[in-house]
Image (tube, rainbow, N blue to C red; front, side, top):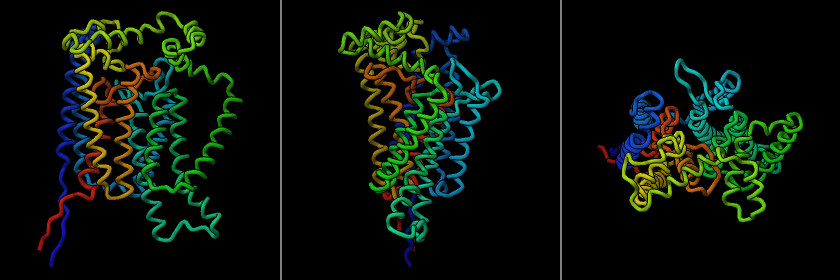
Length: 414
């Protein structure tokens, strides 16, 4: 008698790429964050030391997920826990969160702060994947049937599109009102990519999309009618759009109108970051030799780290980092192609999209292709919660690669 046993092996190229990105990120952070760390705590290693701690925690989570069988995530309880905890944390943040710079995005945990939206990014993908797998299992058992074909189309649209997308967007709206516009856009994009990979038919997309649109328009109309001052929470978004418009609009009148609403202080950060990006030339000034990190670009270790990095390493250094992200993306695409089910495909697509959309947004902002978003550069920028949960997302991709692909090696055993 011959038994076929699947051998599960970790994705060595992806693991090597993880170590390359993490180590490279710590080197860049050390080079960039010295002045800011000394100014904050009289310690040039302040941000690097803390980032190493967060990275070690994230690596433990990442490799723990790598060796966890992906099929264990595919059940109803995981769906409920992932979604329920995400919704509960966002509501808790709205009620009892700490307000920093006019935004309520953090929950205090002792002396530390926890940004709940970083967890939500992970949880919502897992919830969508496990929910979709549950629906497909129920349908295979002959359930979710309607009494007539017309009603069946709406039933399919409800369970395939309206319910999962509506539930996910409910959380996304809570994030928007924190306000956290960039995270709202990121999660919206991730939801779209997850649904795109979930084998939902076009009729359900059309019916479900129409229902979601109508409900969204009606809800927005009611909210704006009852909260006429709602735009007060989004003045920072308006300002960022004005800065971008004043610098890039071909219409001189519109550019002048946008510029009139700004002061030199408003545009200093963007201007200095852009100057840093351009002053690197082909080869840069050398690691550690940036001038812009000395308070010309504030918080250089966060949103604008790419500009300071390019100032020090030049066009060549910037392209090397971009090529590393592209190599990571190509490896993830291969994982997606080899997934063995809709469940694992949604996971791989969702977590790959989550990392890459943040890379694209951050670099696009620093190249002045889009208005500022406040999105950090994955595995490079400083950030405790972000680093831990981005490594968790990487771990989920490794998990799918190890135990959720068709190309796993099989051996025959007598």
